[in-house]
Amino acid sequence: CNSKYYCNELFRLNGLRTPKTVGITYSDDTSRALKELNTKFPVILKASSGSQTGVGVVISESERSLHATVQMIKLFSKHIDLIVQEFIETTFDVRVIVLDGEIVASMKRLVIPGEFRSNASLGAKTELIELTEIEKVDSIKAAKLVKGQLIGVDFLPAKDREKEQPYILEVNASPGFGAIERTTKGNLTQEIFKHFLDRKYWK
Image (tube, rainbow, N blue to C red; front, side, top):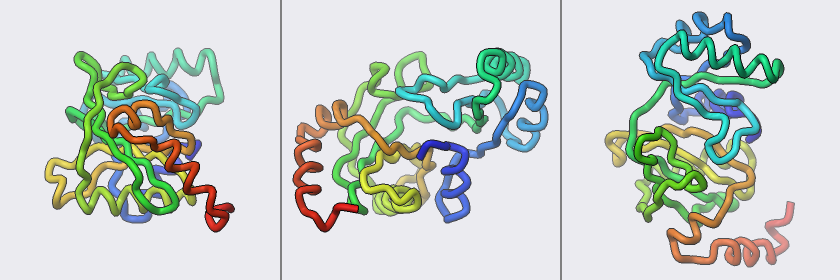
């Protein structure tokens, strides 16, 4: 789960839908990355690993701004792994918690007004959501592909949620439960502890 680039390739090669994603290694690599990405602006630039609560994710409106941003990041950390992704406009994304192959909670996270991010920790409002069968299947598959017992799966909804696959954004091996417990009004933490009281789930 630590590499968004690796997970994107893993998911794509196994039939999951993901945003177009390209690795970018240095500022002068901008033109090559954009050509390979083959999408219009704006685009999303993010750290392939280590970002939390939406930090490390920026939006670029032009090749010039993308070049300058990568240049600035590399000035302070030459070895950071970066990826550039197509921007998919939406009003919300979804967080799903998968525990040993079963969905135990999910919530909708509304995009923050004037922002493009929807992290609850940054102040995004959350709501209950009923997942479609396609969304359930793909969320469970994403968690299984990274061989995780307790995984947070984030995805963007398709335009036709009943018929089209969601865009799997990333998976989180240490998801927070505060926002999703407040939204579902349940005790997810207690449910997880009860699950692991059964030794058959110990690995």
